[in-house]
Structures are given as C-alpha cells and as structure tokens.
Length: 212
Image (cartoon, rainbow, N blue to C red; front, side):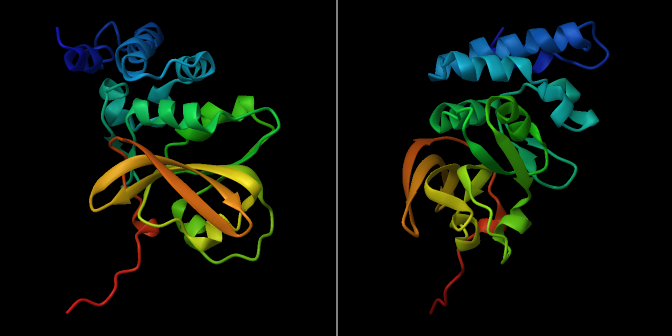
C-alpha cells in the first residue's frame, strides 16, 4: 500500500478506524510517514503533533481525510495546511516558555492548539484583523502565520517586539515557501526556506501595480 493510500484510509468514517483509537493510529502514521521522512524530527515538535487531535480542527465532512498529506478546505472558505507545514513551523519557531505568541489563524485553530501549552501566552487573530489598521500597541516575541503571504502587512510587523521572530509562509509568483524573520528596529527581514505547499492568504496579497 502506498503512503498516500495508507494516510487516506486510516480514519475512514464508518470503519473501525473511525474512533479515537483509529485517529490516534493515524496521528502516529502522520509522524512516521510524513514528518520524520521530511526531516521534522525534533522531539518537542513530534510530541505536540502527536498530542493534538487534528480531526477536531477539520469539518465533519473531512474527518476521513484529517491526516492526509495535503491541505483540506474549511467551512469558512480557507484551508488547513498539510501536517508537514505545521511541523516545519514549530521546528523553525522553536517556541519557549518565555514567548508571548500571536497566531494569525486561518480558521482551523490547529496552530494555536499546537503552540499554546509550551509558551507563556497565545493570542489569536484572523488574517483580516492582522491586515487592518489598529491602534493596539501590544507586541509579541513570536508571530506565527498560518498561511502564505505575498507581503507581510506593516500593521502586523508593528505587533512584533524588538528582536522578535516571525515564521510564515510566503508566496512569490505562485510558489510558496516557509520563511523565518527577525525584527531589527522597524524593519523585518525574511529568509525563505524550503519550498512547500501552503494555502495563500488573500488579505496578504501584494498591492497590484499598474501595467501597460
């Protein structure tokens, strides 16, 4: 049986695997066949991915494919990314017990659930709020973006504390990559990392210029 087929059939509704034991087995398969084989091996990352039930963060209609190694549509029109994306985010973020974290959540709640027990605090906003102008002055040592952005909004950069870190997806000419960055003064420099499939956040699209 292929890896994809195994992932698809682990939690098929109406089968004996469609219970808590079946989902637990699917999480273990996700760890072994999707994360470890792609270089995600940090024990704290694997422990969080194993502990959080991904099936609680997808629509009821998608329970049978909760652990598929591709993104899944959400009821709000967005998507929850493939498990590998979240493993890579945690690996690069290396959150600590001292971190105050802001998560830009696409609607699944999966990333906040993964990070919450291992940091000092977590606040969650949606992409629209992240892109909107705000007078709020609270800043964070770590920002995690659940999706790919063509451009990080200045309003979101302002929420990052001095020397704060950000882990996000970036989208360039249709290609999405994971990226990490650190704020220096008022500037944020992003370093692109591995190319991987990441759902794009339309609110973070770069302004379209005139073309002739």
